[in-house]
Length: 195
Image (cartoon, rainbow, N blue to C red; front, side, top):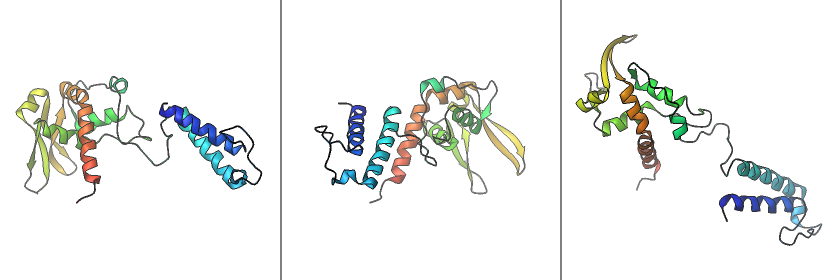
């Protein structure tokens, strides 16, 4: 019996109990049985309705306002990614990826998750600036892949922007599942109880 079939059986049992029917023999339950209590019956009716929503949704719990599942994306969604013809920052790469999901139901992919993975792949390296802050720069391998740096001026002065051409963007898309897996692994390590 599949999980969906188990859910359907549980829903059917609850529905029968709510209606004062013993689900095992289809006989009416006694008038003084606890399942005939109005408050218990309303509670069972509510659970029956929630269970029906889960069944209708293929066994996945329906959307709960305020709760967003961890980032995930399928191949069909990724196939819609439009690589930029000109180099763009990682925030725009992840912005384009995040536009392919429903952000009300799912957390966004962070650019930090992507760049941390790129560091592990020796495509970026971390430097410490004179002010103590860290930033990332492309390695030689990263440059060959299509990661470049460009000096820019912003509201707070000059800075180096790391840019990703279409080849680097496609590399990220092709390795996105590995990036997600690594991010989720680190998240689980952070949330695991410490000895």
